[in-house]
Length: 191
Image (cartoon, rainbow, N blue to C red; front, side, top):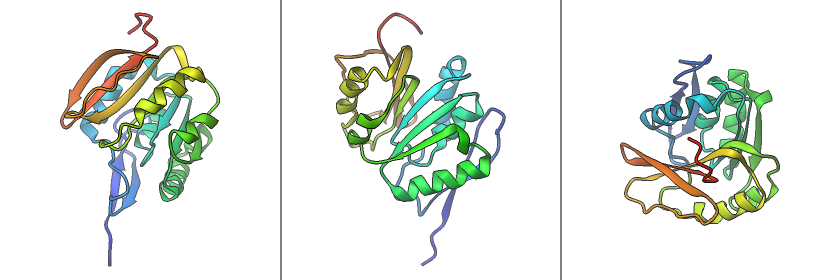
């Protein structure tokens, strides 16, 4: 049976308009919508140049590719589906971004325990029905993965309850379509 392939597009930056392949059939991931991606990156525009980014639940790689196109320095991607990792690698080669990516294959929260470094931005886009993000906040705090002025961005279904964290402060939320973006920080008052 023939399965169609989803094509995704970079919205801004030096790779604006470039397309890359999504998964065949589109059943293994829920790609971020262009509308949500545009809102997210408009909010984060000033934080992207030279940023070190951790992308959890990477899926298609759309967040990583968009961030790199807009000036991020490096993105570490964590994804559990080996097919998605292979597709991200193929797309990164096609876009000339492979040297700026580190691809980690494994499930969360387990794979997060292996991550090293400090990040300006940490994206979390877990399956909408999942509360696994609740388990990730304490690990991020304990391992000091978030830079003191960094942000954690969590995308969820807008009907979901907010995930509270004792380790980070929820600074704002932003509704876009069926999604809501939550922005967390260390709570030092930076925007």
